[in-house]
Image (tube, rainbow, N blue to C red; front, side, top):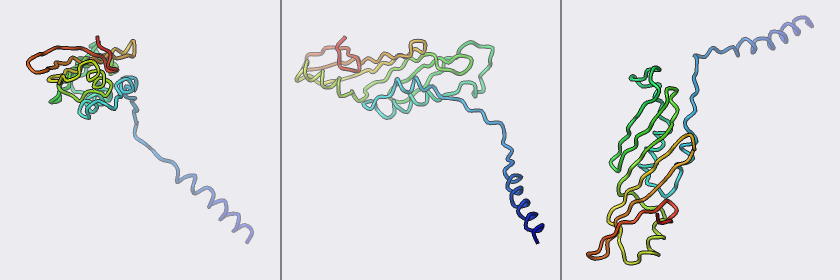
Length: 166
């Protein structure tokens, strides 16, 4: 009886060991460009612009049919109705820089506030939001070119995302 108990105990302890052998296919984990996505994070930007910027950060040029490791860089264009973005990726698929241009997007609160303080009674007719990002510096430059009107008068102003006039 004692031997039977030891046999069942040993059998019960070794069975789960064999059950935990799992074979997996090769999995490749590729990080997205978090620096770019972190730099572009802005709550005041339109959702369509945010979505496009997320695509830029997640895009993997190495998975595309035109990819060949003999080229040093790839220029990829992305389009939405509000504008476009051109991104440069290196041969490893890392995002190097972007140039983005969007028309008639929602202005950030800081820009709207600066406009109403400096130009009361003026209305924004058109706006162009430009973004340039460069990986070696890990920084972006965001500017707004605005066309303002007050009756028959028109002026053009340029500001950064913080409402500072340039």
